[in-house]
Length: 410
Ligand SMILES: *[C@@H]1O[C@H](CO)[C@@H](O)[C@H](O)[C@H]1NC(C)=O
Ligand SMILES: *[C@@H]1O[C@H](CO)[C@@H](O)[C@H](O)[C@H]1NC(C)=O
Image (cartoon, rainbow, N blue to C red; front, side):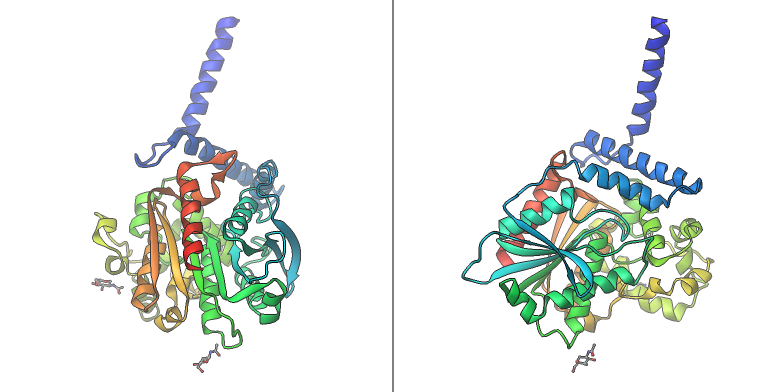
């Protein structure tokens, strides 16, 4: 009996280790922590898929309830920061402000959270901690946008809500109400929030109805395009947790309301194959031509992937793939030129590294000053893993560094 029990325990331990273990790039610090985090996340995603196929719940709702349950356990930090949940032109936002009314005007950051336009809770756990830390360290007003998400709403609703909230906040009378200096407001976002922050910065830049503009844009491993799922970083990091290439492609399909059955076509770039409307494509493609926009040390041995034949229907069914409001990397130089000074954080072990790097280069070519903070040991999501109980040294460092940059330049 005892032997049998030992045998079963051993088998279980091996099975768990097998499930958790994945080979990771050597540069990643704390690899076991990342493996456990990744295995948990993979488990939740699989649970979502099972519940979805049984018709119990949408897969995204299952993942989100797991995230919300976890985030609810995270203790609230910087409790002296006051939080107020209100509407900005009909859009849910939370405004954080340091206690007391200063004589002088404060700085402000509008923050847009990530989670693939579908996941995460801006008012809970790590995002709440992050906003409180920005408010405390910068002595600034921080507005986090609680935009509605997929699958309940799709593009362009997430984008529209962020633009509406930004335009409302930048109104002189609203800034005055929060004692904010109109010359010192930044927009900031991570991952899909970096996508929305970049798109909002473009929109406010060209918007003649907003007299107040953002002073800075802070884009943390932003996702900026969906025409090439085979950039050097997509190829290099397709199997690096926690943002696998297939997961990123699924988020895009959820956002743009595409059929998930298209997943295997788009990760092979079948939607931009050579049998497509080349006039349309070559124009967009030149804006994400990574053989041209990236330094050789990042390209390494990777080659662009343009299949000869593909699925022309995809671009027809999902025109947003070519829309700069969804994919800010596709914006014209004239639009980029009107955006504010930029800080772009990238991680070497992130499929989105090259989205950020290409955007940094295009902004520079358009005359915008860019600081690119690149983490050799960075992986996607590290900035949200900077708080107890789930933290990584690279996450803590990245948060300190981007806030220090804001402190210096805002
Ligand atoms: C804003 O004004 C400029 C110059 O007057 C004009 O070229 C541009 O089209 C206007 N933008 C919008 C969005 O109306
Ligand atoms: C990308 O850039 C390379 C090198 O400058 C060039 O040879 C190639 O034609 C470009 N491709 C596109 C699609 O613009």
